[in-house]
Image (cartoon, rainbow, N blue to C red; front, top):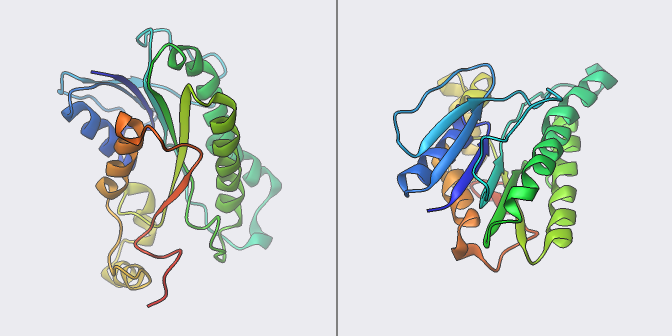
Amino acid sequence: MANYLIIGASSGIGQAIALQLAEAGHQVFGSFNEKEIHSEHPFLKYFRLNVFDEGFSLDFLQEAISGLVYSPGSINLRSFERIKSTDFIDDFQLQVIGAVKILQAVLPKMKKSEHASIVLFSTVAVQTGLPFHTMVSASKGAIEGLTKALAAEYAPKIRVNCIAPSIKDTPLANPFLNTEQKRDASAQRHPLKRIGKPDDIAHLATFLLSEKAGWITGQVIHVDGGFSSLRV
């Protein structure tokens, strides 16, 4: 049994990852912020955490942490000319600075694990230019750079990888999928002709956290229904 920390585990992909790991018999600590959540699963414990806070403490975690997932996100799509510089700063604070703060707090515990792994999240929009995605592409592009730099700095002790999905059927994406017409249009843009599910992403994340992925680090892996690489 390994100990895992999932930041942003109250819904969507983070929750799917937490549940998959707990069902596999691992001890999982999952954070929530505004939406309080409780789990009856004996291996899944939730705690409140706001990554914008400066004084948060993770002292309650086990002495050794084998895996960390940072999954808080936002989808702010708008015309570049309508975005204020403060909007970019706010998004960067959540996506990048929040990840940095958590990583720096947890790394001492990860160094005590024999098989430690970190999973971060980007988006298909970073390497596939899409209109109205400047804000999310900027912050998630930084995450892809952070992934590779961390993977180099902490090899061979800690593996670091990044998953870059397309749109998923999660509460965060609901404004873009809240009608049948929107859902069908989104599905048709993908070669596999469907919208991604949280478990589609969670399966890869749990694999990357496991020892089965022991020779994989520094990678940005697309899980996007073929969107980034195929035209059919």
